[in-house]
Image (cartoon, rainbow, N blue to C red; front, side, top):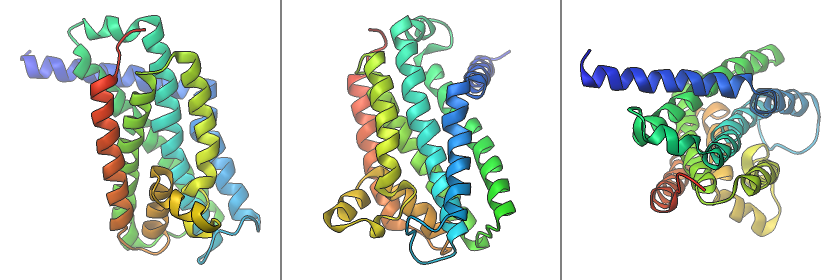
Length: 247
């Protein structure tokens, strides 16, 4: 077996392990799949809050997909990585043939695997509730989800690599709750006054608005993508600079 093939096999094995951990953990499954599904059903069937122009089920489905990204790429990864760092797992795996780069690649693939499961589950639920996304919006919708995933994974690694595990748990869960109202489920233009402007400049608002532009209007959210790219680049650079593999 050639070295590149062996390295790829190690990364895939790590990705499978990470995926099983994320999907088998009851708390993570609740945050990653159950709560976004409840948010989708609740928003689609209720009349509040105001989600703006468009069919309510379409807006709810787009917001739920954005919430799924935040749940897995940020909250789930931050917590799991933070506790792996505290227990010494990251340091140990970094010294194996997998290496630090392979470990990070495995985590990234695991996040994408879980995201694929979320998209299938939420998509099926949305279709059952009457969601009919425009065909022209599927590609920009996928790009929005991938950009959001990259951005929030970067933020998760920055948090998990610089803060104690117990603090990571508290901050990640608090951020999940706060971000719900800052553009993830509710469009930023529905927020009052200056809060609308602030939310639109945050990765949560950019991701939520991007999914709605794509999956409700069938458009290409270039402005929101630019916000996600800036946040993702900044988070990635900061994580590379300050991430600690043990502690």
